[in-house]
Every structure is written in C-alpha cells, then in structure tokens.
Amino acid sequence: MRLDKFLKVSRIIKRRSVAKEIADKGRIQINDKVAKSSTNVSVGDELIIGFGNKTLTVKVTQLLETTKKNDAELMYDIVNEAYKTDYRAEP
Image (cartoon, rainbow, N blue to C red; front, side, top):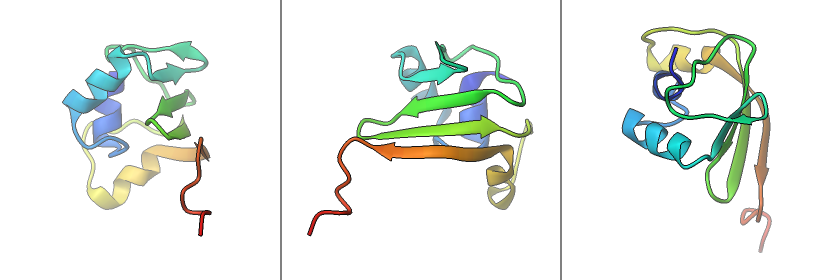
C-alpha cells in the first residue's frame, strides 16, 4: 500500500493530499530512510512522521484498504510521541 494512502486510511493524517505533501517534503521516514508518498508500506515497518513540534513514531500492524473510524487505530501501534517543546507542561 502507498504511504499516502496508508496515512489517510489509518487516519494518522486526515487527507491524502496533505499526506502526499508532507511525505514529498521529506518529513516522513520508513525504517530510517526518507520516504516519498509513493513508497510502499508493509506490515512491520516503522514510520517516523514530523508534524512540526511533534514527532510521531508508529509501527504498522496491518494493512486495510478501507476502514471504519473505530478500526483505524488497529492498523498501527504508537511507539513514541515526542515534542520539541511541550506546551502542556508550562503553567
């Protein structure tokens, strides 16, 4: 499955066009290699996604062509969620 489609179906990113744009800017890595939107994603791959202040690391657990909102989280496990600046901790 293409990276941009996986991100949309899994609901990590809401729109496929936004997923494509982020990937083509080099802000997504698959198994420590920079990935484009057309890169294939497989079960077991580790994705590192840069969202600006947040870096999300997920491991792909299954690939589904379509999914309901409740089942989308079954497609991946969150490995790490790091923030450059944690605004929630400030008073």
